[in-house]
Amino acid sequence: MKEQTKERLIASTGSISGATSVLGSWQVCHSICLGIVAMLGVIGITVTGMPLLFLTKVALPLWTLALVLLGVTIVLYFKKHCISKNLIVMNTGLIIAGTPLKQVQSFSSVFLTVGGAIAATGIFLFIREKIKKKGCMHHAERKK
Image (cartoon, rainbow, N blue to C red; front, side):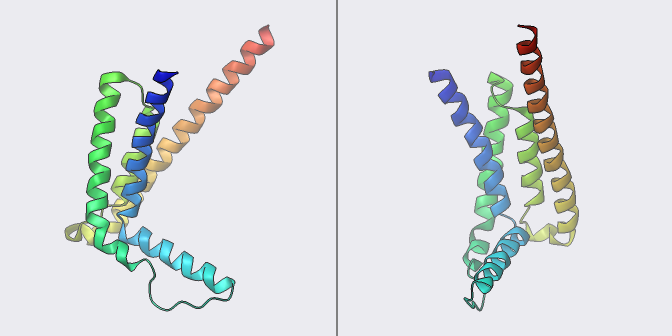
């Protein structure tokens, strides 16, 4: 029971890393903000300006935190092998997609495309693994 809780905590660290990397991206923050403004507009509330503009001030620190957490997750994966490599691939893609560095903003579409493809690959591999495990479980049940 204790080991399962420890594994969930480690997996959560990887998930937080991926989520933090997405928050570090200006494009994603901008899209989320526009989505909130649109949803409020649908229910009749008019908003002017960008209600989540404050997130752009913390984009780089959040992205850096995501990068550090990804590093910790990778180290734990190689030392303990208790984290899904597919989730690490997905988080890596999210961090690449969410690169907020001003020096590379002219290549942001490349980072978004490459990171999105890597994240999608991680999601695909994760789902395929779950389906494969579920299929093996059903096959074992049929033998009984």
